[in-house]
Amino acid sequence: MCLLVYPKTQSQINILTSLFKEMNIDFEYGRQPKEEESYIPNKLTLQAMKEAEAMAKDKNKKKYATVDELMESLKN
Image (tube, rainbow, N blue to C red; front, side):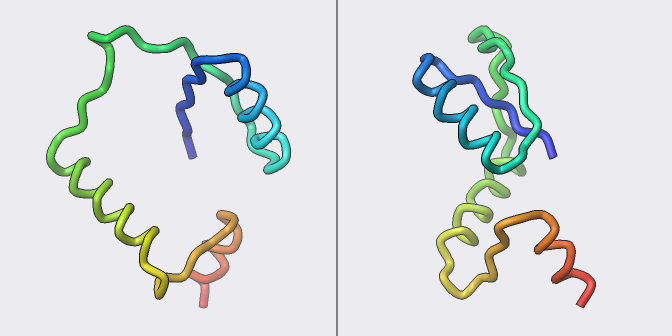
């Protein structure tokens, strides 16, 4: 999994660093992309983002705290 994070303040860096270390996530911070380098999602990506948001809000959907939990549920 790849997660891009661009904290803007030292406080955000401190919080994210603490969280990622607690969750045993390997991470590194990249530079903030310039305005013209910013990614603009296409229609399919926007649709997928809306679907993911709806799934996250659905109380009837199974939630997984780790990738291992998700993979285990797929085996069954």
